[in-house]
Image 1: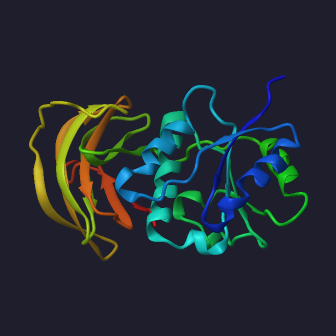
Image 2: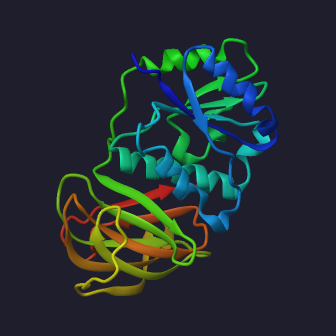
Length: 261
């Protein structure tokens, strides 16, 4: 029987003890892989990490070790949420995730929104790694939302969000960001592949949309999107929330608001 594979991410001051955390997991027969955490927001570290959590012989779980202070920087919270979203989209289901505090287990409300389905542990307890084994025995979660949300980041090309339907068909799409972020380009293409060129049907640029009392600046198109198609928008900035859904001119166009930070 093949070993269960764990991707280990160690944040903040805990990074100096990364080998010790890897060894603790390895004692239980887990294959531990990982990479040094990249906190350079301009390098879009979440894009690379999301792919690494999904490629080849996919990790069976993602274990994050973080002292409390490491879960507060905006850039790190943003990167962790987006990495989880990218991994879920590429894998087709949520990746089992464990977040271990150093000395105390974190509270769910302290985690970035994208990690709030994680199992909470205390890496200061002697048996914390055994709880990862126990957690892996639980039934795997499935995606409950009827949409896909992901992101891509390329130095030189920028940061792109990607949305589309999971199983139905959208008669167009809309995406919006709050003040402090800006949409600069959009396109439609096959999922997970940024289109080099495309034809946009009745594009709308820079409209103001209010959702639950919060204003967003949104772009939209009326291209038909199936489960293998995506709407891509290039965004500058690090928005705390994003809004997306069907084209505002279509009947029964549902709108989703996703918190990232």
